[in-house]
Every structure is written in structure tokens, then in C-alpha cells.
Image (cartoon, rainbow, N blue to C red):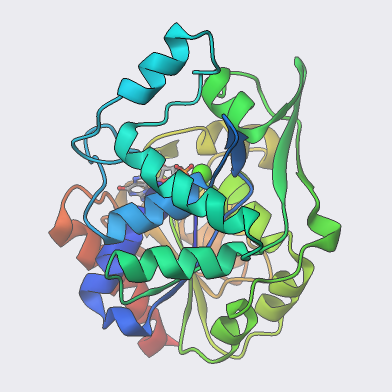
Length: 306
Ligand code: GDP
Ligand code: CA
């Protein structure tokens, strides 16, 4: 499964409920990664790790449950950089990761160690071990992902998404194997431009998907033409000309065989089918564990249909 850290991480929880987690590999976006206060932070990888370990704060929608903020308060008092919210518990992961990266371990090795320490059975892979950073060109200037998303609250309309470092980015160890030796490839209900986009921008990942011999099924992050959360619909409108399921299918042209869309978008089914993508209509709001699992099962059923 290709995943970002929000809808992607939640969907992954449903997936490991529906199938043996040992059979699941998540290939996770690293375009959002950043250095904060000298620490290497990988927000999407951490969201996935926390979600699968049952540590996420479900109400806040990011970070860890039972979080406290003493370290960041101290930073702020001292005039340090405090716009990117790092909780005390969360800091533990960033400390361990940063030390290992500085000692020369690749991000994939560090991630595997964190996953094992958290007792996870699924395989969690960064899309690449090389630095790949998402940049947004907007009418108000160019911003790296977190400055656009967090500091500026993704208010600037996006004219272009770029991936710094992508030309040198190779798939992390295990990524191509995971795309080759599987029954099904899933694209999570994540933002197609800034969560899945950076993964697909790695040339050898995209070409592996184009040459796939197994079905690839995406799940739409839209419900009734709106994102459940975040800028996906606004970006689809500006970059693809509309925020329908068909516009989303267009983003994944040549890469997906089926698209799971919400009942509220059922009218888009013909337009999706005209693109050569089989529409699968179901309820897609992951309001609880049962809904997450059902959505995963609907996507998995595509194997039987293929
Ligand atoms: P990020 O790393 O936090 O930006 O997260 P993702 O890109 O993985 O997920 C963000 C997307 O998840 C948004 O576009 C939401 O519309 C979508 N999303 C969140 N919750 C749900 C849900 O319950 N159902 C569906 N279909 N999409 C969801
Ligand atoms: Ca993200």
C-alpha cells in the first residue's frame, strides 16, 4: 500500500484488521520530512507507526495520544523555533531516529527498527532513503511542504508541486520487491499530490507500477467532492480542473485498475469507468474500527473482480 500519514494511516489500520499484518507492506511518503530544532522528523512515517501501534491521538488527528508539550513550551520561552508542534512523547522517536541517521543508518533501517520496537508485524518502508522534499509554488511564493501546510495553514493556492532531490531518489530497499511480489497494490485515501505524488515521482516506483502484473486499486479521499480533511479538493480543483472522483482517477491514469469511491460520489461512476478505471462504490468515511475494516475489505474485493 502507498500511503500518506492521515487518511493513509487510518486506512492501514483497517487493512491490518482485514488481513494478516505480516502480509502488508506500507510504502510511505517522505516528501513532508523536515529538520526541526536539529532533529530529523518524518511526519508520515510516524503517523503510520503510531496508528498501527495504537498510539495516535484520534481526536487531534495527528501525533500521539496522552501527549504533553513541556519541551516545546521551554523552546518557545527560550525564543526557539516552535511553529512545528513536537510533543514530548513524539520527541522520543525523533531523538532515536536522528541519532541513528547521524550514525549513518539509512532511513529504511531506522524505520524498521522503530516498527519492531513498537511490536508491528506489517512492514513499513519509506519510499526512498534519499532526501526527497516537496515544494509548493503558489502566487505568494514557493514554500517547502511544512511551511505551506503547517505555518501557512495551506491557504496559498497551489500552482505547481515539485519534488527536490527526486532525480537522485532510488526506491528504498524492499520497495520494488514489495511492488513485484504481491497480490494487490493499494493506493490509500491520501492526498494524490502531496502524499502519493512524491512516492510516484520516484521514477523506478512509477515504472514498477506501470509494469505491474497485479491489480492496483486506489481509495478516494473525497466524499461528495470534498476532502474529509485538508487541501485535496482545493488542489484537485486548481491542478486537475475539478474535484470529482473522475478528476482523481485522472491523477492516477495508467496506474490504477479500480477506484473505491464514496456513495456520495456515485454519480461519478460513469466518468470514472470512461477512463478505463472500474468504480467501486461504498461508504468510505472511516468513522470507527468497523468502518475502517469494511473500507479495506471493499478495496481487497477488487482482487476477486480482476
Ligand atoms: P496527511 O499525510 O496527513 O496529509 O494524510 P494523507 O494524505 O494520508 O490523508 C489525507 C486525506 O485523507 C485527505 O484528503 C482526506 O480527505 C482523507 N481522509 C481522511 N479521513 C478519511 C476518511 O475517513 N475517508 C476517506 N475516504 N478519506 C479520508
Ligand atoms: Ca503528510
